[in-house]
Image (cartoon, rainbow, N blue to C red; front, side, top):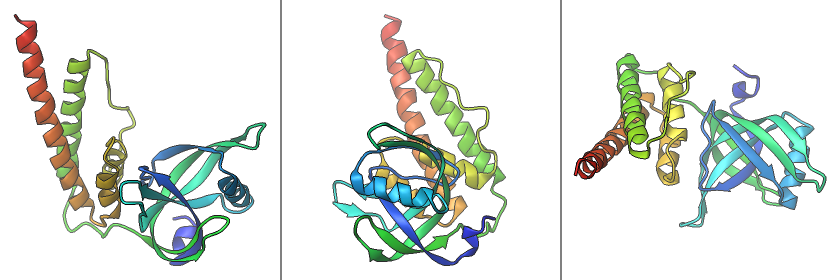
Length: 215
């Protein structure tokens, strides 16, 4: 456990990102060019290299109240003061209140974690992984490309749930709901529903493709 995770409440610089949801253990590359966020990152680099990422919902014009702490792992300063960086998701948090808004947002946050599981989740995680493999196989067939899951796909249920959630594309509001869940089983069950729907859709498209190709 990191030293910061032992602190129940702390102030955290906050970085809203349009339609982006960061999950624990997942990487997030960033290109910092806006003046106020260059100030923020320079300040962070002189301290513990941590800040909070919050999803900004453009459709609603609202910033999420639950986000994920990011740690700067590597950075590169560009000649015009822009900064390229690689960050890694750490623990999740809930914003209790905003301490200040300018030059950038700082919030008082509390850390949140999943509840200890009441049952063995390995079987559920195995089901989700198999659904993933089905989706990848059908996607490869449809696109005629060699798509593979990474060799280091997480095996632990919680980490797998974060991996799956972070790799859902174009559904930021759904990802936000998954981020806010504090029950690993519920997160995996919802992901199984999403993957099952995706698999069935891809399977139907594959049948159509095979039917037309046979003619």
